[in-house]
Image (cartoon, rainbow, N blue to C red; front, side):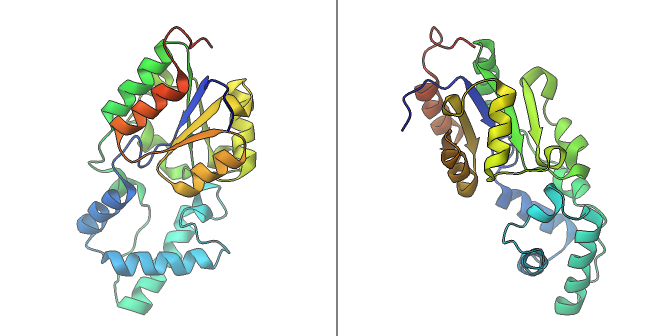
Length: 220
């Protein structure tokens, strides 16, 4: 493992700057009245039709529009489970009452105040862009934002990590990804980065402090 000090920290959005994805999904299903098992089953079937097992890949690069993806899901919900619920976008319900992880925001603000590069690296759906920006002040919090739908590459692909490192202006071994998804962390490691699998803010912050170094060391 590289011993280079981390000078660029890239954070994920969903599950890091927000509650866990499973919690958000549970609230979404409760709000919309859609059975969670049925929804996840048909999403999986639609996802397989695009040659992947990653639920979000078809719509965050995107391969298809969210509207087309949801239309396919709606058809299967009716055919398989008799659920006649037309969903035109996930964004409104998905982001309603979604809480910001302010403790993690504070950690990122502290890093940036010390001169550490702080960016957001997210597999994001185009129609969700305005929604997440209402949850955090991107201009104040980040030096740069890399969105999968804007750059045509996504985690865990090597291309998106290479791009993010170039945009941070540092070599890969000085970059760190904080992400709740194990596959994304593995992709970062394969690209020569460091990675923290996010589960708890306090634990991630402690590991971050160890990898970034002291305030005196953190010079951009």
